[in-house]
Every structure is written in C-alpha cells, then in structure tokens.
Length: 138
Image (cartoon, rainbow, N blue to C red; front, side, top):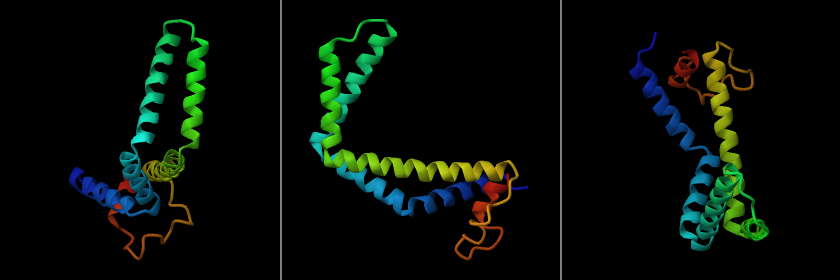
C-alpha cells in the first residue's frame, strides 16, 4: 500500500503531465493575453461588480432597476464582442472539460472501476505500475 509521500509524488507528476496538455497550454496563454488586455480586464471587472451588486439586491429582495438591466445587457454584449474574452471563454470551456475528464477518471480508479479500454496503453510506454496508476488504485 503506498504511503502519502508516494501518492503526493504521483500527484505532482500528474500535475506536471497535465500542464503539458495543449488545452492547458492554450488556456495559460489566453490568461496571459487577458492580463495584457486592459480593456478586456475592465469589462470583466465591471461585469463582476454589477453581478455582485445585482445579487446583493436580489438577496435583499430589492427591485432591480431598468437602467441596471440595460447596463447588464450592454456589458454582456460588449463582452461577447471582445476578441480576447471570446477566446478566453472558449479556452476556459475546453480547460474545464479536460479537468473534468481527469477528475472523473481519478474517481473511477478510486472506486475500483477498471481503466476504460480506450485509455489502456495510453501511458506513452510507461510500465503498468506507472506513478499515475497509484492514484487510480487508491
């Protein structure tokens, strides 16, 4: 039975492997681009602030004014037209999909389910007891 350090080392190796996935690399790159795009960052900040304010009003059972709804719609439209934010949304969706699949596969291994046939042998020539398999067997 592996000890905690073995599992943590395997988790570290899995993290390093995940970081090399093209979807993860693309997501990191769009985050970098977003950080450099002042206009896109301001749109997101305004949107988040408005969402927070509208949520607080909703929780306090206060009415949301027509002007606030219009501001929300304008911000949504501006966000949907911003090229950097469009790329960010697409990259974020792909990133979340990959991470969800990874988590589901870990969960399957933890529950004792066998590795799906399409994944068998996908370890890039790694031996059967590769470190990532330790996580799946616990």
